[in-house]
Image 1 (tube, rainbow, N blue to C red):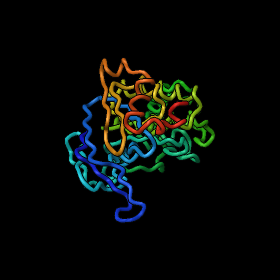
Image 2 (tube, one colour; image 1 turned 60 degrees about the vertical axis):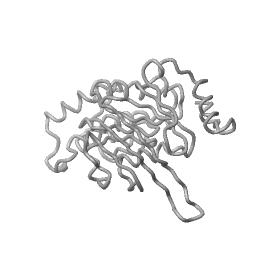
Image 3 (cartoon, helix red, strand yellow; image 1 turned 90 degrees about the vertical axis):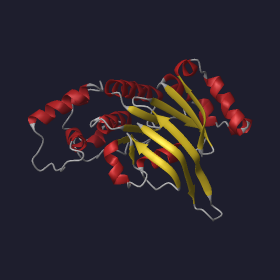
Length: 264
């Protein structure tokens, strides 16, 4: 479903700020893979997601989604293949619009999107059924402005909207990092449920090693713009946080393991 072949990306080449963010990165995801991605700051995690999304062109290598070479596709042309949830709960929804209006925008993705004709009773019932999946009671507040929701509610709604059209690839960029632990656990529970139900191919970046081990069927560690560790199946199930900390130390030296990762 996703094939990255020898991807490279250098920012500010030829200047004192030159930074190689991706260095010959290769990664293959089968349909339905749920891959958690960990790595230190500057390892290339978010850069990889941006490369897949087409936020900017890569310098070398190819990107294929479901067998289609999208390397030269601009961001808007890749949008139909992707669903994405960002770290900031304020992104991904329109705060001044109602919950049902936000749902309508997501459901009409790729079509002529206008609210001039309003939302039909059939559409409203469909949105209600989808919102019930979240278990947050939002199906009873469909006329409420999204700006009135909590961060966790908005992030759960954003996740639902991102998956409404069953994208080829779901990109989760630390989508629970800004939430309190209890709310983050709820959003991750919803994530697992939706990914499993729709058999979505998913890349989830996280700094929480426990979450990286617990969720998904595969775990990769990045360093220096490439994958340095790839575990799945029984190997992943047997991993511990201590194992991952040791691998970080091996890759970067003992001083490189950040407080953020240890606390996570």
